[in-house]
Length: 144
Image 1 (tube, helix red, strand yellow):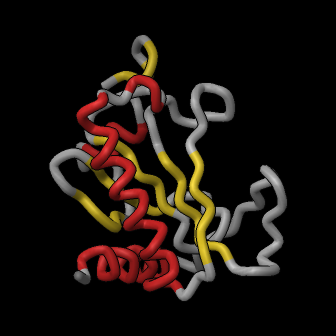
Image 2 (tube, one colour):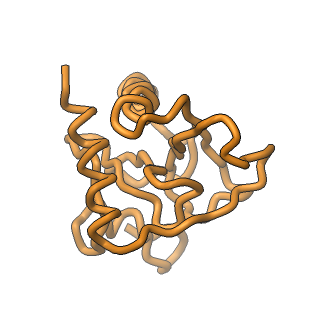
């Protein structure tokens, strides 16, 4: 699907399997994958499979599933990554780098340096490290 006019949507390409990503969860409605420019390692994005630009565009019937998965991801940050908590955020239009609804879930620890809305970025050492983070989150999501 196109984000605007003829511009291809990178998140739709990830959902379709056309663009590689380190996925942590997939179901009929949503996909969770590692952010390519994480604030901290383990930073994931939750996106609906269907293209909606902003949270207000998400149909009412999908809200509960979206929020339920966000809650599970917040828990996974602690269980899978030994984070003390998480930062959860959605931008709508302003500061929305990709015009496809996405919710950030960022692992947090006291003293991690994140202040206000200044988002420093980090990198994974390599693809193997990124795959390991995705696998740990995936395993935590699927544990009862």
